[in-house]
Image 1 (cartoon, helix red, strand yellow):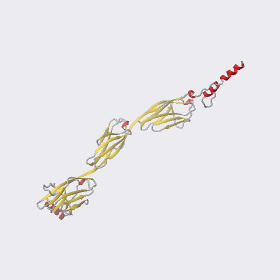
Image 2: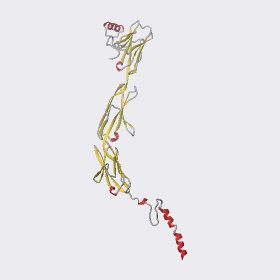
Image 3: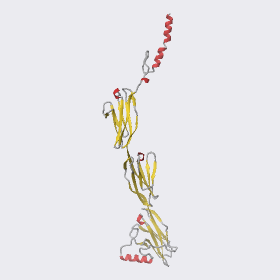
Image 4: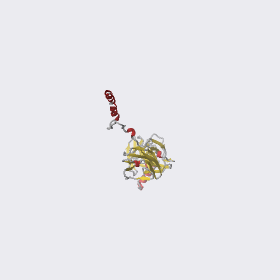
Length: 355
């Protein structure tokens, strides 16, 4: 129901009826614009929900009676208010203008309003249409969803507003923001792990700033080992084997040597597992530690494994040469050998002198 409504008092309603007859505004019958210059109402009035709408009607000194009507209900007759709505107030009643204001406008106020006047000749009317704009509002959106890779999803985003808002879906990913569709419903078939992430629904109708909501889509997939390398370590040194795996949910890791599982707390060995990798640390590598190790990554969707070898790394190429006459003191052994070789001419000279 729009603005208006007469007071429920018999004699008042009788007066209203008389006014309607005076202004030739039969109850329930839409009024028609007159063909005279006056009254002249405004063009269509457009306001946002919650704002105030001012309805003006230009008149002249030929006008003897004036009234504003909402459909067939009288709002004001001259200076007298005939509606119960406190939001409707009289702004001006002069020889040139007759205007009212509707405060805190709502959507049910939208519709036709009529300025009706009585002149010396006959009643005339003019109409203005009030248009109420409403900011977009998302009233329904899908909850966050978790789905296995290869499955199908359907996301919903319902919004209200005047005019009807445009719905836009975008995929928010670390790489880029990608346009997906312009519809209330987003369908994805055979979803892949690359399509996981947040999906943003934006509702816009140019009345106010777009309204944005997001839905998180989690795509589950079995583990995939992305990095694992064999490592060479000398005896007595610290050695590390590492296994990296991508999986949703995050993978659980296990380490085996041959058929024996390695566990945390085992003497000389530390097993450390995080969300995307597992590390096997040897604090003091012995001959018995060398060999083939298996890293197993698993989650509820499956498992995978990889073999990694811890092998002995030779250090011969790095050890200074130790031959006859060489003394190793941590410096380059070549300089000491060069010093010994430098004594040979002196020895030969000594032998020659003897003879």
